[in-house]
Image (tube, rainbow over all chains, first blue to last red; front, side, top):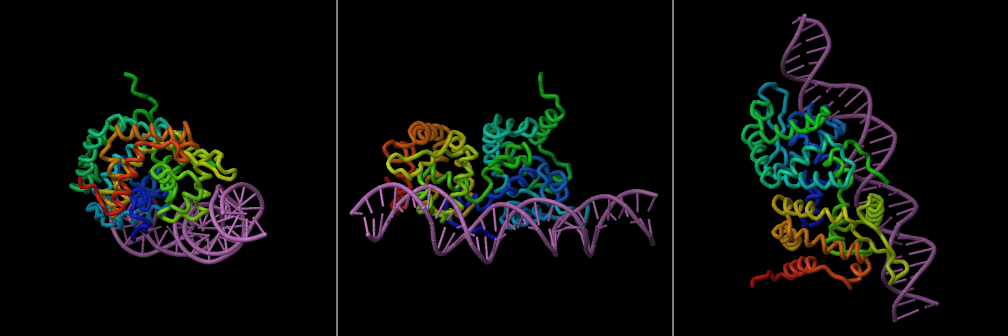
Amino acid sequence: MDIEKRSGCPINLTMEVLGDRWSLVVIRDMMFGNRRHFRELLSKSVEGIASNILAARLKRLVSLGLISKCDDPSHSQKTIYSLTEPAIQLVPVLAMIGSWGRQHLPVSEALSIRAQLLEEGGQQMWDHFMDDLRQIHIEDPVGGASGRRTSPVLAQLTEAFERVRRGSPDSR
Amino acid sequence: MDIEKRSGCPINLTMEVLGDRWSLVVIRDMMFGNRRHFRELLSKSVEGIASNILAARLKRLVSLGLISKCDDPSHSQKTIYSLTEPAIQLVPVLAMIGSWGRQHLPVSEALSIRAQLLEEGGQQMWDHFMDDLRQIHIEDPVGGASGRRTSPVLAQLTEAFERVRRGSPDSR
DNA sequence: GACAACTGATTGCAAAACGCAATCGGATAG
DNA sequence: CTATCCGATTGCGTTTTGCAATCAGTTGTC
């Protein structure tokens, strides 16, 4: 699988790679939700992605080098999907997109709290988060998928999300 | 025209708005190429957008509030398309996307020089550029479209682009 | 050892979006 | 009067999407 290369413009090429309704959403779930298996991405999808679309996107993203797959030792049939370095470097892009969406689109509070924290955290938090992601996606994908290895930044984002989701915003 | 709202997630909503192969490319041409008329967007398109796709995208982006249209006083049939404030605030997003594309995709030098300058310019340049865009798209769309009013930042980016395109990189 | 649940997918099919070429009616310039 | 330009629209075939059902192999439970 390859991109068209309608032109050598960076924005055009990026849209050829990520310019559809699902690719970035899948990457978002892997990155912020640590969904590493097909079924996790399928059943925990807030937007309700269809299984054939998910399969097609995963295959495409793997062939484009944004995602890698490896066997899960705990289950001979399980595949662990991991973000590669190029996908991890989408953190600033996703932070900016989240920030823009939060300002201009009808977002829900619970689903945008992570974007807000990432925005407020700035470049320093992004760098820290990317280092974390390298640990659980590249250094130790098996440990990262199983939960044996975790990311402090991700835990922080998830905790804030859970707190808001439970209807008890941090009022301290 | 309206978005689906599959979920209230900022990233998802942004992809519902901009997640196709053409919308951001059209906005890029308006923003960095100052293409303000249908024919300009159509005939000067590096990627070769089709006229029906362009018409559909413009209509959609107008209805979503990212683009506005007004009459061109120089020609009763001409329509001037302008970026609205939400679209102008995509500058940091486009800068990040351009930066990512430049690092990870097979870009051409000429078409990525503007992304490089925008990346190097940082937040300060983005703010300056957004102020310029407000002048030629919101304050004075007619003057901005005709060239009577210009943007210093845009002129700087365009000059660099032309210089590289002519095969004479700045060696001074 | 039977059986249900779960694994990452695949298939069929209808609907929508896309891409391309040709064309439209109106306005303007020479 | 004619040629060109204006922002589109139409027709049509291809591709992508969305949805539901299904697949074969693996695992855990009893």
